[in-house]
Image (cartoon, rainbow, N blue to C red; front, side):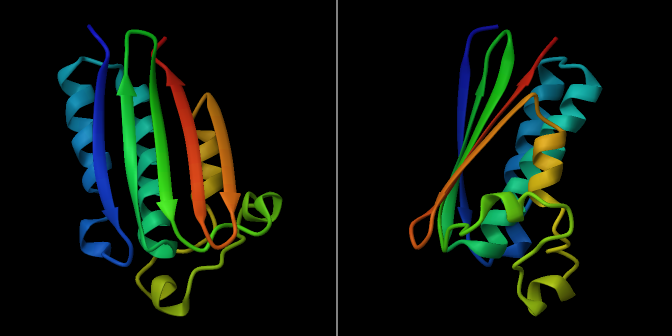
Length: 140
């Protein structure tokens, strides 16, 4: 398998499209016969990241790189940024609005679930500019 790259645009506030990228990536990984346990981990992490962009940012994009060794995901958003990453990484901490919570999102598990379901997780954020999350999951 040669290296493949996919790009998905994410629109802030559009919950009807949340999950589009993770569904597409799940389909691709199944076609590549990736182990189901790895697919589940990747899809959970990607979905959580996708929902974070929809819930918190104006817009963003997702880059997915698949090669023989690993799946790399970068989620880059233009949004408010995260003032305290250590606090944001705590299970249950959320800055989601009441409206977002009423839709069933914003429980404060997104970032912890992203980290838990990947082999490498990095987050950078600049208040007033946006957030970049990089995750990799090994294929073996």
